[in-house]
Length: 137
Image (cartoon, rainbow, N blue to C red; front, side, top):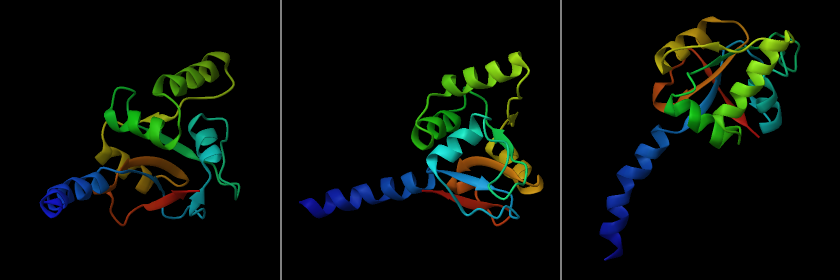
């Protein structure tokens, strides 16, 4: 009785693993891990460089993209509108700029792979060897 239920759930768990949103960086970035606080500071555009001093180039999907919402809520523990408010505040006050926006996960992969110091996110199924996955501590 329990075995058919477990077998029926297997495809869902494998699918869920593919749909996991991961943090990605340009292959020459020297940090393999970031804390949630550091990641949140980088995506809020408060921290503009990697711990080794290299400039961070942040890429994000549009606010209404479901992967952006999942990344913000699950990985940064903030709502997308909170990030947008922080970006708007910096832009309008002249103290900073918003991250670069890309239109799709494929474009995210391309831009992060080809931009030194780049940081972004996408679903695991879009990964390839042109970028590295950054673990969150």
